Length: 211
View 1 (cartoon, rainbow, N blue to C red):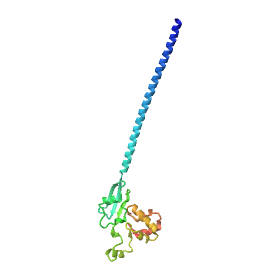
View 2: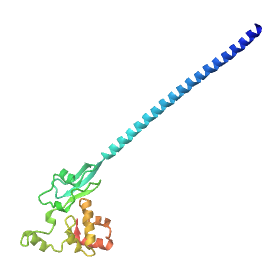
View 3: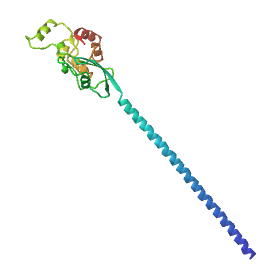
């Protein structure tokens, strides 16, 4: 019996150790689970913060898209002046804001579909600045009297441009395309942005063209 009691005590001690090990193992698993849950919660908050940042970025983009353009509308319009427009507005919008064109306007001299740029000047040319009319009409008489006068830059045709020294068909076409892309030009000096026009040609343009 003493031997049996000794063995029983050994078995009981071993069982107690195993129970303690098992309890510690369960406690560790619960601790790791709690830690993982906290980390997941933090990640969720980070993701939420990131989403908020994204929203802020989107809000900035919208703000940038709504930035106003300041455009000077002049020439043959009813109410010339400086107006504000939203991004994406076109020359036709600028003309409408200025009250529309007058009876003397020559809208074929501008590109009404061109997109407006900040600081741009939209010039609507007038018919009085162009050379035309019947051979016996007042316009023809005026053309004869002012045959040597500068041609309006806003209404100059390709044929008129080709008559200027140093201007050929290709350069004349480039000038017209650049004028249309800008919705009109307010100064002859702006033509120095056209490729193929050097200092000598610019001098010819200044003497043969008027804004």
